[in-house]
Image (cartoon, rainbow, N blue to C red; front, side, top):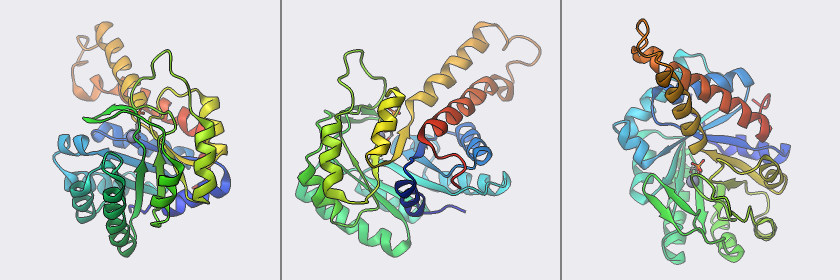
Length: 287
Ligand code: G3H
Ligand code: ZN
């Protein structure tokens, strides 16, 4: 059964660790993430961008696939199905389709509009027992067509959105989606500190979790980050393992072209990466 992310994130804040949000794109991603998190006894959040949902033929398909897989694989750890960087219409559609968690990303809107729409969605989500993530200050870079300049969030704006009673809050602190450039300045811990000071115990979300040095991630977790989003890293390890399989000519041996064989090295690489991230975030044996 899908659950809201509220309890798992409150537990993470209290326990000083973070829950991973791994973004899914298809059946293989979903299966490997679920199996590894079950093995590690870790709660997990499955993130679905608007683009990934479209690729998987829609929100209802995603809910049906994930729910059925949780049952057929015998998954017992808490799993939240979360819309990632959704606009207002997508948020409404996901609530309707049966998602257990929503991110409404109003960071590109004027603040008063972000506040008004977030407020409306908070009320709907509270009534339905769905967790809601809001965003202040863009996360730099591009993800599935959602582009942002990546300015650090203003703590005063964070407080205004936080006061709407959101479940969790994403705020730009120098983090970037996709690969980090060689000259990246690192996370801005002074900004994180100022934000933490005005949001109390609200779990903070670190987007762009791929490629941030582990020490910086651990420091951010110690300062109030309770959810770390990872997408690009899983894509990179999957692509790398698949490329090696093909370059070694294994797709030409026997029935190596069978998609169940062709996709197996990438799937195994996803599992390894999930294990590694969960160990860094500290959420193993917390379910
Ligand atoms: O919303 C999703 C994440 O922020 C993923 O970022 O692709 O850099 O890991 P990433
Ligand atoms: Zn993100």
